[in-house]
Image (cartoon, rainbow, N blue to C red):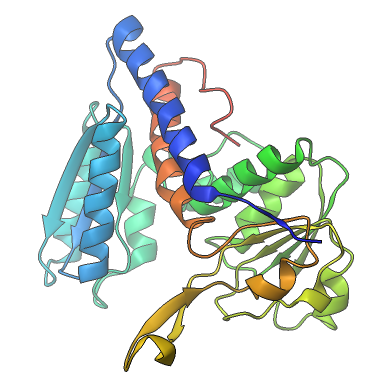
Length: 300
């Protein structure tokens, strides 16, 4: 058996195209343009590239992009003042602060300052609570992207046995709750799980989000299972030259692809879905703020 390769890059392009179609309709029918504001603190090169890509894709979708770059030594009060301004701005429907931030700032306090209805990263504690309790919430972008890929691959998730490896607030826990919403039977596995390989072998769906290179191997996987690899790990690649590296996931792609029914690669799997779902969340936030129907197929 050779697993189907789930092309997250192509699927993300389709999501962005659907978002753009909805945005055009909002403009033409309601005179509304969704707006996404990104706050970047400091000069981390990777963050700067990521924010630049977000801005490009936001504008390509027809949305307004607002970028606020603050110095690394900015005070918490100054950061909060910018967020207060964005919270009050009716042209801004989504706000995110690019993490990590300098060590003198608290990511938790920054997230708490953003209005939950504008928290398009889905990290505010009220959105987390609403997700757990089954209420309307902003879902974190990466788990939402995983859910979209699973729905596309499997159709209904009802009754499927799913194992989520990892219990982080960013991916593991919200992923489990999104799967529960779709009526899957969910197990969260983690570092204290006894015989984690045996637990995974019972699963129709495995979502790996632990940050350990090639942790999940073929003998962990039930034949025909769908495997979603959230991990992005950079490891040495001496075959490419001195000091060279390459990206791998939490799943040993080469071995697992001989057993699984479908699998996401790294790179090119879950990664591209994150910004696509950020745009989808911004569109959803705009619709909700004006009492309009939410975009079909782009929410949890």
